[in-house]
Length: 591
Image (cartoon, rainbow, N blue to C red; front, top):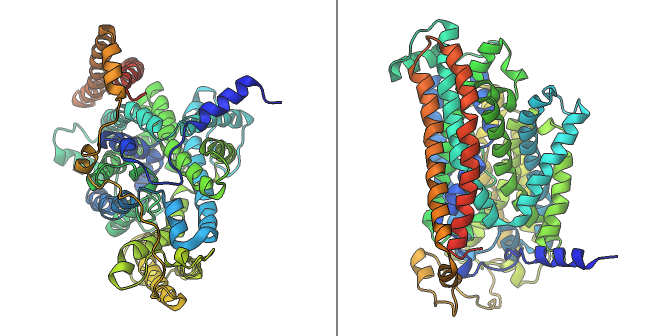
């Protein structure tokens, strides 16, 4: 029997409505800083330790890492800015609901089930990453098999997963607030770990002191990104590195899944905030993680394949590194779990989003107990993007190309179709062709260098073009060129910050009410906690610089001292930044 307390809790959760089935209204649009924080927090993730170390193990050269990642991440930012964000702003809908207008409810159900399942697996991987750090404190061995090898690891994952699900239930703004606090500090932990362990590589190999960028480059060429794999197999090429950086989040930008986030954007320029994730996370963090991985393998005399994120982070940062991996896993799995909830929401319209997210979160947490995705992360990321990306191509064609070539936009829904066979068939053929390309290793014949298994990184361009051509041809055959009754006009959503600012004022603004009631003590608390949190960030940057600048002489003792000290400003920052953020939101009247 439901109790009054449980009824009240459900009603409170039902208030966490996030416009899952309708355009975002003007007064709910979010500032650019929320996107910058959310994307930085999501992409400065625990898996960066795995990917950064992978480049070392796969024998990537220093030039290939530095320049290849620069090019690939730039292409990812442009894809978010020029493709994903404009469609999100023009529709103000999630992909999961917009696809319903394009391809009908049955097609949408099939896509959303596939999408949500893949998101749950990816979010589960991030929870596994978080657990890889905490397991060291309890003496749990690294979980490198596809199944859990210690029941304590399962208990740990269940506990961490409950936190992730709770944050995902709270919705977009709470995710952004959580990431806004964690992102600057997590980035400094990656940067600091690389700085403090770089002299360790020099000391362990007898290289000498690092006094210039050319010294760093020579050390990296000789002992980090050597261009050679440990087993002598083919190394990863420049173009494979660039292509991997571009497709690493293919489902989000090229596949348009991040319409769920950017539908809140005030203008297209918000798409550029993806650079905070790509260059702080997928550029600097991967480079620093590569240094940390190489140093950890040297210092522990271990193979990189046997080291997980927790072992790599804690080698240079100890407890602060463990916390960084936990939070990095959370800030990535939270928005991923949020997307999964939205995808399932479109399939279960009778359920509120919070209930769907809890159900998806339970499945995700169970998946996280089995580290099979973690051990096959790179293959999963590639195929997860290739499976979902064709749907993004279909949406782009319908949204932008059809009106320009005389086809009727939303022809399937205007005809009253429950399923769009052109969409399903072009999507299925595209995925099938990708599987055949991989099976016969077609791209190996066009690559003069690089890993044989790295040709999958290049599939997305031909598969995208194939999907666009097939869908256009099939839609023409199905009658998309005909004339259909116009749909009811919807209010035009704002497309820029100027449009938003021009919106009529509300009769009573929460900000005005709050400012009248805001005591001076709140302002003082904000000033004190803000100053303390900034000072702690400066300390988190200054301490690793001190270890690096002092060089290899007395390095071991200095590293031990650093590991003991760095946890202090880290804890103080996380506490004071949280207090500051809460006070700031209260003062702005956004709570």
